[in-house]
Length: 382
Image (cartoon, rainbow, N blue to C red; front, side, top):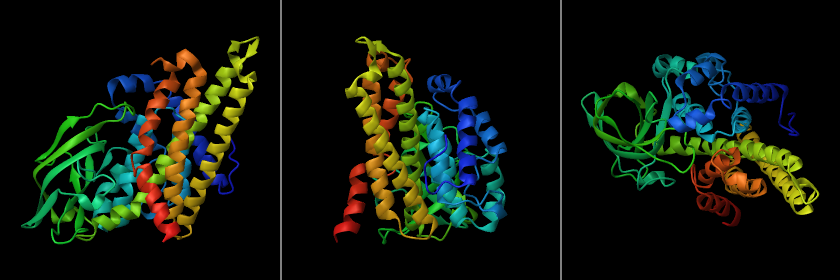
C-alpha cells in the first residue's frame, strides 16, 4: 500500500512496507495461539530486534536509526495491520512508551548498560506509572521512593502495567518529594530486584495476548545509578513522552481500522444476499465509504501532529485531538464492520470480533477521550 500522505518519505514507506510484511509472516499465522496463551513469544521480539525494528527512535550513537516522531507514527500504523492489538501494544510499550524515557534521560553509563539489550529484544521494557488512584492524573502517584544510603527504597503499587509479567525491566515512577505535587522521580528497576512482585496477572476484555499485571513494590531498593534523569523531575519526563504514547495508540487504531475496512469490504463483496452481494446495497457501501473517509482524516491529523513535533512545535492540542477523535473513530469503524459481517462477526473465530474488543481500550488508555478533549479545550478557548 502506498500512502497518500504528504509526510511519507521513501524511508518511511520502506519502514511501513517492511513492518507490514513482517507481521503478515511472523504474527498473523500465530496470533490466535498467542491469544490463548496470554503472551507474545520472546523470539518474535528477538527477530524484530535483529531486523533493527526496535530502535527507530534511538539515536545512531546508541545503536538505533535516529529517526523522529513520523517514524513512530508509521511503525504503529503498520503494526496495526496485524489485527492482533495485544502483540502491537507489547512492542509499542517497549519501543515508544518506555524506551523514550531511557533515551531522553539516561546517562551515558545507563545507555551503555541497557540499550544494547533493549535494541536486540533481550531486555523488554515496561512503564510503571499507573496506579489505582493515578492513571491520566500522573501527579496523583502515591508510591514512594525514600533516600536510603547510596540508593532509594521504593514502596507502593502499580496497576494495568503492560509487559510486567514477561518483561525484564520497568521504568518506574515514585514520589520522592512529598512536599511537591509534581515531585516524582523515575527509576530503572530490573524484574529480578528483591521486593519487586507481580501481584496478579489481569484478565482483560481485549488485548488478550499482551501481559498486563498489578505490581506490589515491597521495600524495593535500587542504587543511585538506577535513578533515571534528575530527581523529582519524573512528572515532566512523563508529560514529555505522553504525546508520543498517544500518537502510537492512534496509529494502532488507524492501522486496525484500515484492516477492518479492507476485510469487511472483501467479505461484503463476496457475500451473496438479496440477489446480489452485500456491498451492492447502498446502505452498506456508503457507510463503508464514510468510514474510509474518517480513517483517512484521522491518519492525516495523526501524521500532521507527528510532523509538528518533529519541527519542534508544541503539538499537545493537535495530538490530543487526534487521540480523542481517532480512537473514537476506530471504535465506530469496528462497530460497523462487525455489523456487516452479520452473525459470523459475533463469533470468537472471527478476526473482526477480536478487533472489536481490542479497539475498546483505545479511548481509555494513554489518556481517556474526555481528558484529551480537556487538553484541546484548554488550548482553544482560554
